[in-house]
Image 1: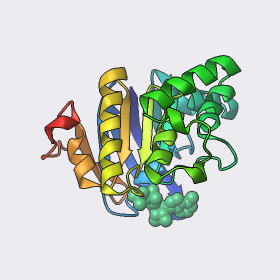
Image 2 (image 1 turned 180 degrees about the vertical axis):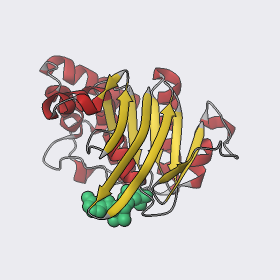
Image 3 (image 1 turned 135 degrees about the horizontal axis):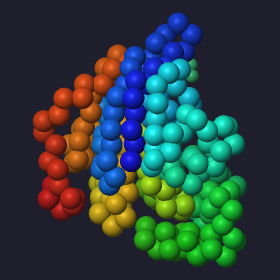
Length: 232
Ligand code: ADP
């Protein structure tokens, strides 16, 4: 699903990625861990086509994304990749429903189909009763679930999450994990999750460690390799 070869990236004189190779299969849930400043977010941004590498190749769902021009890359991103950030980044002036519908609009989905899909996702998230609420009327956990629904609205092949549980308390954190596992099991969604959260990392299929711009691609020990949250 994601094939990365020889990715490098510098900001000025600082080389942040020093040659990254990573293959992630369809339906795989991979966590990326490592100290602050290791380059995890930069790698995720490049995987998400929000930034371009200086060199190297990245193929997502069979598409060599580096070969796409800016507008085709943006269209590819909107259709194939869903993002979940630590701070949900919902648009404050829009309702939960509208926030979820926006990427569908951008992808050219009709108003009716976007509303139907957003409604299904709100239902799946147990948030139907919050559809008309604006972000400041939602709890932290609800906001993050709306953000996950928004990431899913175009049924992307890949979900990229950067510290998705970072702003949540324990209860909401556990609900978020459960949701991710349900999505992976139900839709074979591929997940790449940058996290400091060891509990979440241990539950993913594979953890890759990053340090100083390089990945340690040796299989990490300690992952439980469960398909369901119930086993923890
Ligand atoms: P991590 O996610 O592992 O904490 P980051 O990818 O956020 O690491 O950052 C790696 C390094 O790159 C840090 O030293 C950070 O300051 C630097 N960096 C990240 N983005 C930029 C940018 N847009 N401009 C300059 N430096 C950046």
